[in-house]
Image (tube, rainbow, N blue to C red; front, side, top):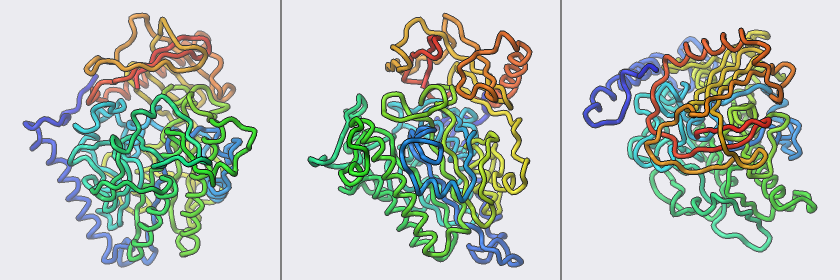
Length: 509
């Protein structure tokens, strides 16, 4: 496995680590200075204003949770966004868990290129996303955009790794993975307790306004929308880039009475609280897009909506008809709701061509008429403007410890550890493992599954034995891709065991 020449956070390496990034940022500053005498225009010769760009990342939302994707929860505002834009039905993220997925979105590069392979459980305060990586916020700010980050960060809590250090002018939200939505639960409110709740407290995971710790009483999803609109209101003099990372519908499962009133009374508490949380998210998208429409900005605003991974098995959500859950390399863990809207440039449609969350940074930078350093994705706007240019044969890759995944056209190859023990059904059995323990291939060996997604999108039927030549070709493609990856910055702290299609499997998250 090839290692990067520039990896690590050691003091002795600081001089070497920071110089390449400073050179990149100096270049971006020069580009942006040459690009415009006015921050809202690309050049003197062009009077076409550059668009605002909003990236909305939601947390643990299931593929089948939105009515736009056939789900049971009515989400009219997200549906309207999808109907006026492009609803991707084969949209993928680069990891099946939160933090690595977000590192790829923010950097525009596969997180395994710089070692952010696992969730930083217990290591949040000692580092974060490599400082060699240029964030899309840094690129957009250098291009003259005002940049805001509202919501969940989860890619570094230590000094130097926080949003205000990584290209954002404005930050309101949390540095870690979750926080309570409510400071108190009243009689008509609902809190459905999960095993994670004892760790998710405001003391451990506080809310910050810039770098000041605060503790507001407002329902968090509503508050994040309010702060996002305030950011837009203060960005009237130039184009803005907003990274709005809602914590909903991640645990804790909490909802106020005003949203619960809209859920079916006969449903279980788990179903009601989850639906209420998704409805609050939908209301927020509605407030956001209404503000843009009312101020005449909607048509020239690029909005990308995506979930960071699939929904987990321990809440009342749905990834159907896809197989498995958050944490799994099957479609239910990595294939997510994905919507792109820009009325001035993109005609409404639906697309089943594979797209990646890596495309977000490349697309945002292209909209700003600049280049994002190291971007591995494609410009979706350009692709969507030219019908047929989004290639259905595109090849996507994943590495999550010993788990290896390739999707190429109709074929998907999954290589995953065998396990001797597992929880019942499809439930994950999760346990902590000691820090420093490497995530290796199991002594029991590995399963190699091949699926034909064109006829089996639910990944129920393994056809590896019937197509050994396809297996061999995809394995070689993965090996070639993996040459540019590096060793993890930290080891996994969580091992999970479960059962998929009757096979006992082991995963590292």
